[in-house]
Length: 313
Ligand SMILES: Nc1nc2c(ncn2[C@@H]2O[C@H](COP(=O)(O)OP(=O)(O)OP(=O)(O)O)[C@@H](O)[C@H]2O)c(=O)[nH]1
Ligand SMILES: [Mg+2]
View 1 (cartoon, helix red, strand yellow):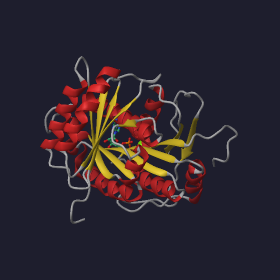
View 2 (cartoon, helix red, strand yellow):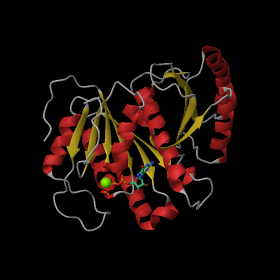
View 3 (cartoon, rainbow, N blue to C red):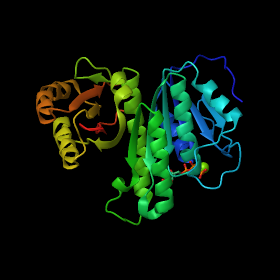
View 4 (cartoon, helix red, strand yellow):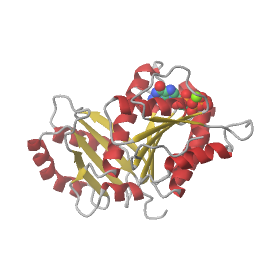
């Protein structure tokens, strides 16, 4: 199993779990994301994956005994637990990516979260939930059971619902929606890492991105590309979609993270903050941005909605 490696560890580890999770983790790196180590955990070693920067740690997940259904809690071999623990050692943040619904993702992402958290890392996950019509109720049901187990261990868990990306409910062609979901997962993972590593500048004083993630709980995300459109206009329309969904309760947090804005736009957004605070009084709405960097300069807004538990938890 994995043992200490000679090169220096990054405090941030991105862990892909299962087929879709591993693909998402690789896509993140391919998009130019840096400043993190990447580990790919799956029950089989992919046959011909081209090596990527030589910086990925493969972790072979093994079940200790055959499992019949997928609803049982994971029974992992001790070697596989050890491999995860070794990979998590001395990390300050572990970000788990997975497509819930798969047997591997369902079983091992909650375990990975548990071990990361026991290792004292800020533990966050960005996961997808299956298409309910196309993938069936068995898969959807097992995915939501896995989500509960996962969220119980994570400081923050952000869900991307595949269903919400279909042009209409029951739409028969999920391929385009899958591509959108891939993109969402990458953008949201970048936003989470910007928050956890202090790269995102928040317009709300007295709170850091890390503190937000430590208390966020379970939420969902919305990504909006801003092509040829002002950010304030986009923020306004994102807010309208958020307001339509009666999601936010007192104690909830809404984080809007803007990427790719120019300085005058940021000034405009800063002025917009007062309005935002008024609109969401009682809840915490936090606007922030990620300063321009070498990596993807896609103009986008990521809205992360953590509803909170309301007055009576
Ligand atoms: N966005 C996106 N989601 C995917 C993709 N492939 C699979 N998924 C989703 O992820 C879920 C899990 O699929 P996999 O990751 O292949 O499954 P696994 O975790 O490897 O589990 P097993 O292979 O069954 O052991 C599926 O139910 C889909 O909802 C993909 O390419 N993009
Ligand atoms: Mg698989």
